[in-house]
Amino acid sequence: MGRTAGEMVSSLLGLWLLLCCWGCLGSAERRAPPDKIAIIGAGIGGTSAAYYLRQKFGKDVTIHLFERGEVGGRLATLSVLGEEYEAGGSVIHPLNLHMKRFVKDLGLSTLQSSGGLMGVYNGETLVFQESSWFIINIIKLIWQYGFQPLRMHMWVEDVLDKFMRIYRYQSHDYAFSSVEKLLHSLGGDEFLGMLNRTLLETLQKAGFSEKFLDEIVTPVMRVNYGQSMNINGFVGAVSMAGADSGLWAVEGGNKLVCSGLLQASKSILITGSVMYIEEKTRTKNTGDPTKMYEVVYQTGSETRSDFYDIVVVATPLNRKMSNITFLNFEPPIEEFHQYYQHIVATFVKGELNASLFSSRALDKLDLTTILTTDNSDLFINSMGIAPSVRKNDNPQPSTDGTSVWKIFSQETLTKKQILKLFLSYDFAVKQPWLAYPRYKPPQKCPSIILHDRLYYLNGIECAASAMEMSAIAAHNAALLAYHRWNGHTGMIDQEDLYEKLKTEL
Ligand SMILES: Cc1cc2nc3c(=O)[nH]c(=O)nc-3n(C[C@H](O)[C@H](O)[C@H](O)COP(=O)(O)OP(=O)(O)OC[C@H]3O[C@@H](n4cnc5c(N)ncnc54)[C@H](O)[C@@H]3O)c2cc1C
Ligand SMILES: *[C@@H]1O[C@H](CO)[C@@H](O)[C@H](O)[C@H]1NC(C)=O
Ligand SMILES: *[C@@H]1O[C@H](CO)[C@@H](O)[C@H](O)[C@H]1NC(C)=O
Ligand SMILES: *[C@@H]1O[C@H](CO)[C@@H](O)[C@H](O)[C@H]1NC(C)=O
Image 1 (cartoon, helix red, strand yellow):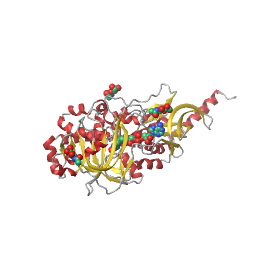
Image 2: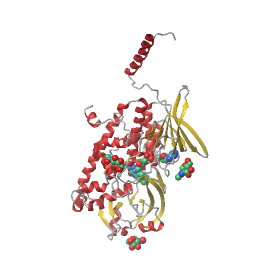
Image 3: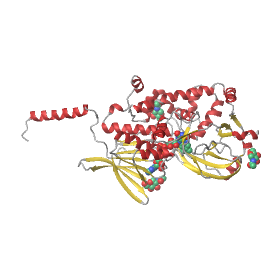
Image 4: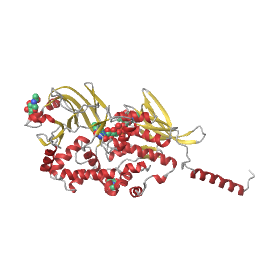
């Protein structure tokens, strides 16, 4: 009381100057970090989100990671006669820089994919067969497909080249508020447009021959995404890159990256299934009413709940896969009706019936991978001798002629079907998956920002599903959450970043 207007103004001015100076002196963010963050799903997406959120928000924030199954999610191993094999996500591209970085920082070791020989089966015979002689392979490829393999390589390189820009943006802390904006920043309209055109359209337009598309490209799509040429062009390029050389995996299993990141991020793992998320107003210890998200989850037979400032959903949002209900949001947050492709991985220890694949049976035993063309009579997508997750176990037929084969199929294989592929077998075990989206361009990607401080990672799978894509989405969401928390709008959705950063050191 009793203060004059002049005094008021000058004290306000003083306060303003003081705030301004704090702003000028170093830390641009004036806001205290959040108290608690929840992440739902401990696959590679959720665990890398924990890692990046810790990096951005510092040591004081409590991070809870909810997982209802195993840490690793779609990265999982299966045991076959005492050896472990990758049953889900298995190979990593040499230019997947986030995955590479994780493995290095966590002190894990890598295994190089040993090439082996590949053949393509059309239901009757092998339409293409690799030779162990490099020069013969080249001659064979040119003889059968001309320069199309080389042109394909260049097309993939071009997509990869643009894609790699994301690492530069992220290392400079830039974030994107939607998958579309992220892709657009990498290569403009044309790059983003790949999501809306089928791979078939894209490659036909680029002049690739039907024979090459049927006998080489389609089989690669079938092994990597269990689908044909009707997927979008971007995931098609990612899938073709998955046929590059230099692919690797983590020794002991790729899922070790997830448990490693969980530990390194000093997050708390909560074993339970999240059922509901609702925004509520809470009074914090500071006395201020604050909007928080209540996460209701089931652990054992108990239902519990806790409150969070920020929530990151790191599992595909659909009834079959996560079954999370968002209560009382306006506008409502609906589940995304993204259909996920059912794929079964079956491991069989047995001796291949080589004469099924070719009449010249005897020299077929050296194939380690058999891909297939798009033939509705075929009951498998692919089969290959599986490398174990331990070192020095190159896929080679053992002396008795038997090997552990990994077979991908749309449906569960019957005993009769397995006996059609093998002369005999003594062990079979299967792992069914809702593996990756069924791609049907044109498609619109789900949002990243579901609500004020509620983020969603798996929308990125609409562009392409891969370990690295989840890691990129996680890094982006951590940066986005951080910048939005602190009001750094200049770090979100910047246009012409490529040009801007080119001139920076
Ligand atoms: C057979 C197969 C082969 C593949 N091959 C490759 C490959 O070679 N290379 C590659 O890069 N990628 C590959 N992928 C894709 C890759 O595995 C996935 O893109 C990636 O693992 C997805 O990780 P994520 O963390 O986003 O999701 P997920 O791994 O699915 O993690 C989500 C987690 O959330 C949990 N969860 C779900 N709902 C709830 C809930 N309500 N409460 C608590 N927890 C919940 C789930 O249990 C799960 O652990 C393959 C996938 C499959 C299935
Ligand atoms: C989803 O969860 C609700 C309760 O939250 C339950 O009634 C329903 O059976 C679940 N659906 C599936 C497919 O698991
Ligand atoms: C192997 O496959 C060939 C060709 O389909 C078939 O004629 C033969 O009976 C099979 N052998 C066995 C042991 O099943
Ligand atoms: C792609 O198609 C979707 C759905 O038809 C549309 O909403 C979107 O604007 C299209 N995007 C581009 C870049 O053409």
